[in-house]
Length: 434
Image 1 (cartoon, rainbow, N blue to C red):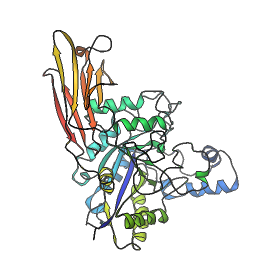
Image 2: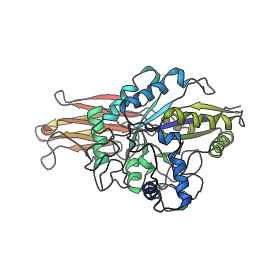
Image 3: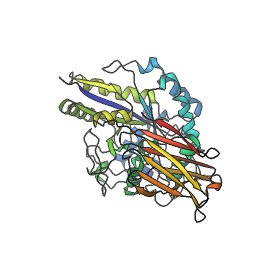
Image 4: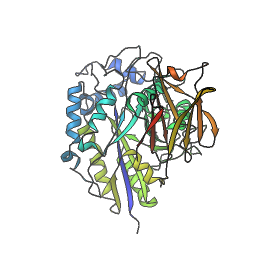
């Protein structure tokens, strides 16, 4: 008999410490108006209760306290308090966000600067106890106010997202294969952007209908998305519907949130689906500026309680990428990506990129550094699995390029990065996310 396995994915949006303006919460009126737009006794009571919870009052406001908290929950001893069915310790998935170059206010004193949060977590993952954790990408669409404590819902009217990915590829030799949208805010423009390059998406925040969900959405609109614990391929025109796109979208619910928190009913549904289908993926998320010890206790207590009713279902802690691979039965295929720049005295230099088989998306991601700034550039299609880019005076000459890197993902989520060394006119290949 085949094992019935429920894969658990604990996602953490890593935004760094957040300053909490007030710890006494005596004046609720302005906050109620901000959150709910009106003021009455029923809502006042709800917000008062919310603000008095431990998770709300224990917001982490300094880098020192943040690192202390992460170091504590990251130890093998802490992770091994409750092992999975295969004797494996708890696994975290760090979805990393960096804020910089916006022109608005920063009242919550976020850590700002290029790669500041990225470098903090990348250094953590070099530690022995963090080796099996997932390292993924998180992004907040830039609001028109450009305030750092706000979140927009549009990526198309600025180059913020594509510039960040170009900078990560050039400066940190990193390109994501797994993503979570900030405030779970995904709209058509982001949907199509992800479909070009990033194969795994944990943004689906579709929960059971409640009063909060009956109103028009402000941030993530997942009202009509799949409510099962099996990832799905979205439709081209509507990311909430199942369709023929390549990307796989997984459902993930908050451990703690203003409007909704994952319940024992949600978890029982995941166990039931694993029991019927043989596999399912239960994903839940929190934030690094919360007390993660307390969040972990909340979710573990719920899972342990429900699991007693499903003794035949095995639990496996997993990183986000491996969970989708396993539940969706993705097969690993040989994936090659190579590039070279052809030079001769009769024409302009031309970059060629070749793959041995179909990549995820339309084209590899080409990032170029020019005059100390990073840019993404479109490629031309030569033939199947072959792309090119011409360096000429109409756009950019090769002699003016200071750095150049290329990245592509396979449908399995394997990432290949090619870094160009100008003096030798050669590319160095790095294969990650095996």
